[in-house]
Length: 370
View 1 (tube, rainbow, N blue to C red):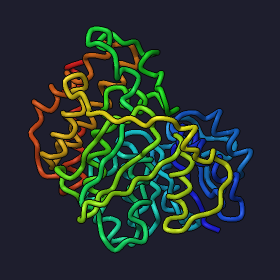
View 2: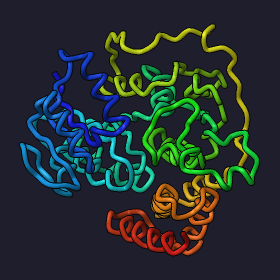
View 3: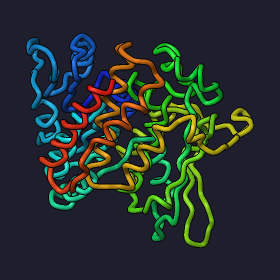
View 4: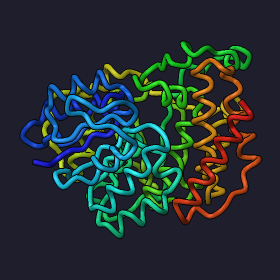
């Protein structure tokens, strides 16, 4: 049995992970649970699972639950943990990713910010500590599944995007979109921040940067197409131009289980079997970069390299928080990010200190632009 540390246990990925673990009690045991601030939900999880360690990052200790900013790293480096599911949202998840890899753990990674901000440092931590990163994002999991057992690496990958709730909206309506409208994703059920990122397509830009680090591909060989049905999760093209795709109805439980078992698979009857007839027509279209400028800003930051991706990520986090707090309109999100990127002095991302400094400055610049 493999010991699991679940970071971000009360969020969407966290609760989906627990659904997977319930179906496989003979394969995994839950050693640690950590949440950000939802102490009530964490308490219910602790009563069900009885982990050896449980903590809330922002809150008070008590009733067997620890508290504090160090809880994520503490859980990720425990001796009884083999796999760390990092489902934390935002830059706060980076330290736990690095610590787990240095401790030789597998990191089942849903915290895309770890790779976006510090892809080279993450790779070095895995190399030095003997850990490994296995992606949970459905698109990157799809690429990994297409590559499994193959000596040949990818020549090109195509990630898919649903297009979000505003794919067909006119500009004026999209600019004035409300929080409630932005949170109505057409195919996926996710947390508030990532749902807004899907509405702006910032999420897809982050995934392009992730794919660059995960699969060692130049940005010119990472494409994105809009696929409203969210059935095809990614395409992988090989050197001879043959292509594979991974398909399935939208659920995060499939990539979560694969991240826990890769390269093996467990029999799992807990998700809906794929039915191509029920799936119906599958359509694809290009990204409308004019309508969704945040995507282009993120990919450009990835191409620039250094600390630019960390600046993009930090500015996006600040802008999305301001929108969710109803402090600015939806249409201002890309303008805030663009302002922060314009003010940033891009440097080398070869140390955690440099990345944190760029992150902090970008947050200040973005806050001023909100």
